[in-house]
Image (cartoon, rainbow, N blue to C red):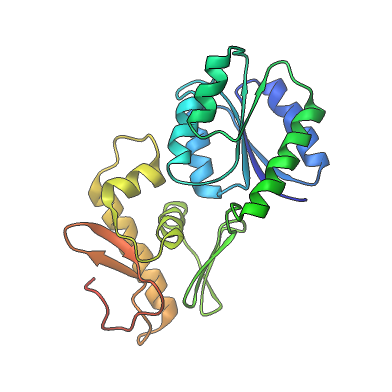
Amino acid sequence: MSARILVAEDDVKQARLIRLYLEREGNEVQVVGDGRAAVDRARSSRPDLIVLDVMMPNVDGLDVCRILRAESQVPILLLTARTTEEDMLLGLDLGADDYMTKPYSPRELTARVRALLRRAKAAGRTEPTVLTVGDLEVDTARFEVRVAGEPVVLTGKEFAILTVLAGEPGRAFTRAQIIDRVFGFDQNVLERTVDAHVMNLRRKLEKAGGPDGPRYVETVYGRGYRLAAGQPGPEGAAR
């Protein structure tokens, strides 16, 4: 069972060992070394499973777990040196699917990862790699966007914004929500920065769709932006 797995572990040796064992299973593994990077990478790459160390710099693993669980059902396996029952219950209460204490066997870790992936697949919890809305396709694994089969080249932030909107077509996201999901913990981002990225994103999508094509990204006045569900016509919501 091949899967996209995000490993968040600040111990370089431990991260390398986990990556080695998981890649031996045929998985595609990404590694980050702190909590902020874990949140940002999880949002941008939409992994099938996250192996998450609790004790990490910047933002600890428990906060990362809480943040991501509010946004996604991606399976989370917590790793920690804390051994008390209270710590284990706290992690599970925050939404972790499994919990391992250090030191642990890498073989047991890979076995638990396999089990979590099987359960997620059976429950339909795996994140889709291609988000399709009408003739718009967003391939999060390949970092590709197509409109009616034609590729559209986006910047990293434009792609991240489109991924957020395409994940829930029709839902209106505020600029603050977009900043939180796309820019993570960068508190210096202004709302007009979001507006500029959305303007460029909209221009590229609509250029690919042709002069008579639909308006993909709609402005919801007083709220923010949404991706039109289905196939809106050119007389859709105001820009």
